[in-house]
Amino acid sequence: AENEGYQEFESTKNKIGNYLGVNKKEKKKKRAEKKGKDKDYWDWLGQEIALATLPVNETGSKQAYLAIIHTNDYENAYHDLGEIAKKVRRRTPVKFKDYEYRGKEVKFLALKGFFKLFLGKLFKQFDKPKYVILDEYVVFSNDTTAINRVIDADIKDEALYGQEDYRRLTKEFDDESNFFIYVNMKELYPFLPSMLDDETARDIRKNKQFITCFPYIGLQLSNDNELFETELYLEFQKP
Image (tube, rainbow, N blue to C red; front, side, top):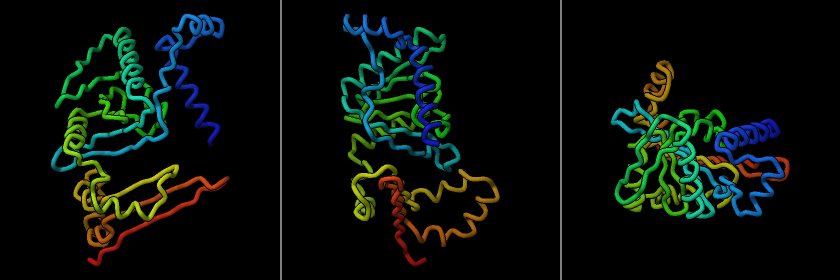
């Protein structure tokens, strides 16, 4: 399965490289390197990717998707993504207008398959994402409202780590891992039924007290040689 995932990554990367015109034969690549024109549009990627869903209306019936990718170099990320956006604009008749929100530049990246490169089929909704660079993170979303809300939270310094409950829960885990998921059931439950099929939503409403009695949940997977060490933490509050 791991080999299949890598092969899919390489295949998608090559397709995008061909589309952007940055995949060259070895001789051409060497000539480009000598002229200082060789391009690597992926070297801004860091080692962290966070995925999230965010309700963008009061009922939660409309969910936006977020992908937050750490970058090793802010200027490099700004340049490389800008170059990709330019090449995409030249090749597509669809025009998307960039805009500024609270002093932050929000850009469109209509590059089909870009997120399949990292997320496979998980976030297939990211066909025409918007993105903004906030410090050392590149924030992508399929929804303008979600991007704007993230910018608002960044300006107000309302990041997740600023919440006491989150900090208390994460003390139970290692600082570094391969995978970590955090659930704030207080925030999630009001929108949970709209994310599920009708039968499951009815069960969720019927058993509300048994679900919300676990307000904070954390799950961590860490590589341990050939195995994954699993840690699950649930905070319980009597209904």
